[in-house]
Length: 157
View 1 (tube, rainbow, N blue to C red):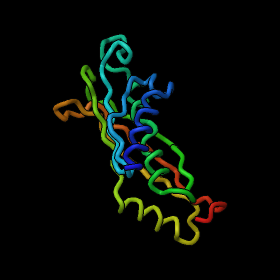
View 2 (cartoon, helix red, strand yellow):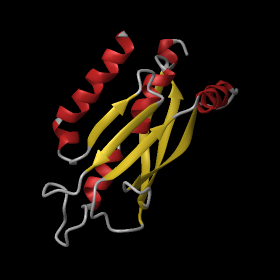
View 3 (cartoon, one colour):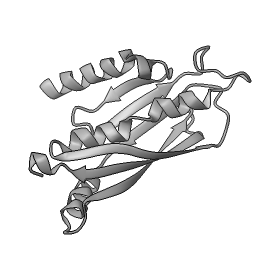
View 4 (cartoon, helix red, strand yellow):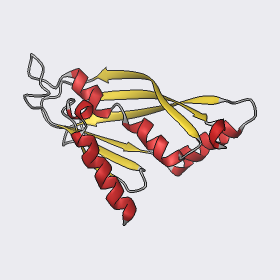
């Protein structure tokens, strides 16, 4: 119950945070355990570019922070996580609301922990991809994020 309330408050906080609010994106769901996040990006006067399609900056900004946040929440104390790099491929102009869904599995988290536990490995880069799709599931853009993960030796990980 407390985790569900906390995730609801995070969702509200994201949607009110000025930097995120400015993207035009809206977080519609955060799972209580941070395994999944859903975002929608309407094509509106705030997100439309000169030719009437969704502005690329809004597309990227709407999906930017989530893999980093999910890893921070799921890995817990003892890990440092930073966004390192991003690549976006525009496939079709967005003239309608676009949706993105982020997921992290337990297997992915265990792979990260195991790789960082390997002697001589101080940090790793993980790559994640998210598609922005319309209501019919047609992909309009694909964003690939590179996230840097290391252990925070000062916290005992």
